[in-house]
Length: 208
Image (cartoon, rainbow, N blue to C red; front, side, top):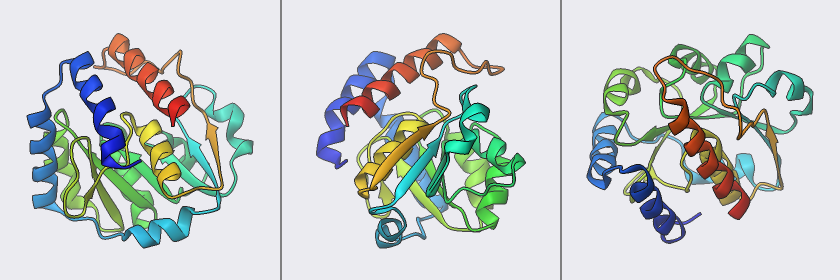
């Protein structure tokens, strides 16, 4: 998805959640000052284009559906820990750094590309964790992209992975372990907001 396609949805999301565009833009600038993407778009294209891409979400059904995984594996944040516990290293992780970042660092050290997302609510996490990544990373943002800070569309870790796979023309996309109705409980998280975010994720995936 290109920025001109994503921007109208982004404006809707800002209004729906009461988020501030300026905070998203600030987060992107802070991320850019800490690190830059060291993966080229051509590398991502070679990895994804024409291939089967299995995107693993952190739904309760991931364990039941793990045998359906094939091709290029993308993990949405917390799904990384589950895959790692099964000795599976994903090819790409999409994260805004609110999952088990230690596990994400481990797979990054093993060659996994990590797409690290900057938005207004994770500025402190960016400052804490972004300097620790030593492998291949891609910096993405919620707002208008610039330089090597990219935006392929998407709102949550799962639908951002989907938008990335679509952008680079995956031959087939399989959603593994996605549950848009019953998110896992997570300490310190407002589950009603989480459910609202998943409704947006479902809409984005269904429309694009």
